Image (tube, rainbow, N blue to C red; front, side, top):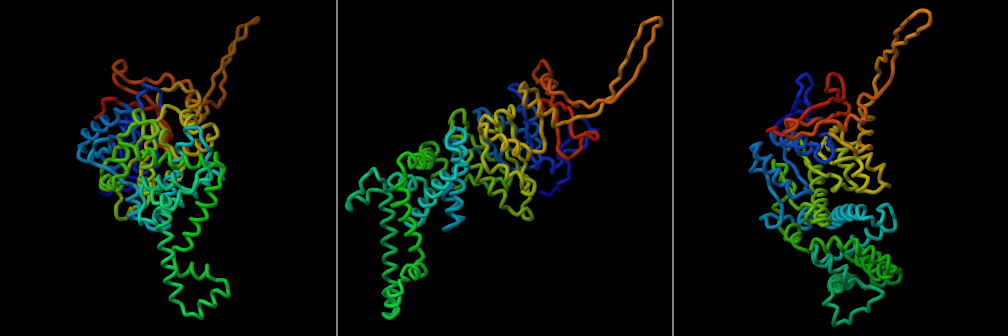
Length: 498
């Protein structure tokens, strides 16, 4: 398909308004409104159908079980039923994210990519559960080292990495409070089995290298004390093995029990969740037919793992897939494939992670429309904690279109009123004086007032049969005066829109 950023995507209900363009939608959208205000059934539906009818591919995250049926209906109305793919328990699809990353990366690149993705998911979960602050440098460094060294050991020993092996390695790593297994028992422990395999192979490689040297060169190495430096150059896995040995048998082993437990549980908690059904079948079964890049072919990928049913694990799995999807969409070459894409999430604060702002900075150049729906700003603060207020405001600032439905949240209404801004109004006044004579005078002055007062959002109509299924909202588009020379307008959406 072919389009330009300034091409019209749709019009609002007043044809005097300028078109809402592809550029506008790629700059991000936030839809807010109280429960029953029509944000999902009206404006959310409107945005979804417009994108589907324009041929967008995309990703849909779910909180409620009925969201799948909504998107089945949307795709039917748009003639896109064949493009909807659903990842859910019992479905024919799965996506082994570790095998997928392994097939596209090797060595340090694979370790770095896996480390980043797992850390994003772990940090997102820690913030919502009130766990360790992800700005704590010690906790971050200790967790980074554990994840990276476990992945490296897995790769060096078996040439691949998977959730089960990573979990087993960390669970059986040396611990000061546990005796070292006897030599004849070590093959039963995943860590010792993997470490012994690597050490045996590196020892063979060292012997082959050293014995292949001329006797004079060997004597020179021994005399100069340069064995380590020479061995590191000759045997690639020699230095990584020393680092693994130092970390697991010294650094990690000697961590204080409480500190180690926190770091270890942060990592293994996520791995354990992935090892349970139905998540193991969905994300660890070595199939990759629910590939994020299917969106580039116009597929609409829906993760039907609603958090209302699957709670924290459902959230973590969806964040994990979301991060992978975002990375893949950022990597594509739009000169070869510029299909417009969308990322759609109701109750979007549920799936917010630390890299979302960075993704939004490049979303327009990646041709990705982010459509996030939430009841109010306060939900974002509650999800990420009061200390994250600046980060929440920074993220919300990356969404250039904001739609405000009926709302009783004071903070959101005040923010909406302030965003729409002030204007100069004429303030007429009249004075009357009665003494011997009766006299009146009239004058006028200029006053600066809010263009939309915060209390006006409370009275917006909310659809349903009593309102002929019409829903009101104020829309504000940053940096683009679409509405008769204004950045904002009061618009109506139809819940029966098809």
